[in-house]
Image (cartoon, rainbow, N blue to C red; front, side):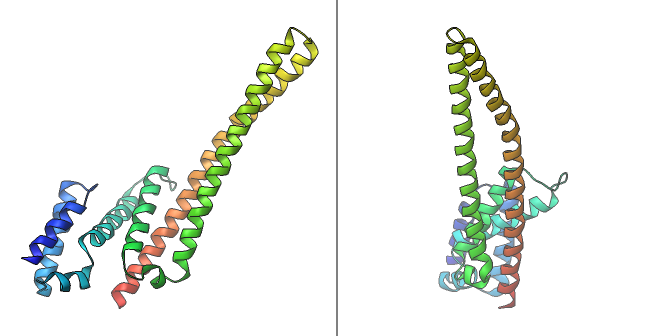
Length: 202
């Protein structure tokens, strides 16, 4: 039967969820298909999309639900937020005309994600440059210390200053990156809710 095969494929696509979550999701959609009397594959996919598309939506929903139930600080872990953003993007991209349905927000989300990637690349480049500069000054200072003492001390001082700058910049970059990812996660969650509201209205 097409319905059973569809549900089996859906179950196989729900990787990353717990056994109980997979069971609940499959049971919910089995009951939904039964109530709607949808048996043929074409009719099911017209209503719910392919098993992979539906699985992405379910995983995005669970990710948002888990995020909302997480207690503690307003700034969640970067890993959890990144996973949620990725699942939401997959869910939006897998739905037909999803980005068009959410209007300009979809384009803004993608643009912001590219800006975040650019921020991390610039930050990594800056850290690497300061690290290399620190190594150069410290090495030069040690070498010159035995040839030109005053010049060696100057280079060692520059190296220590660069090291101090590095120790100051690293936590700031990590904090700013974490807050930035949290802001994008909040926007992605808002956008996904708007998309679901519009889809239900249609």
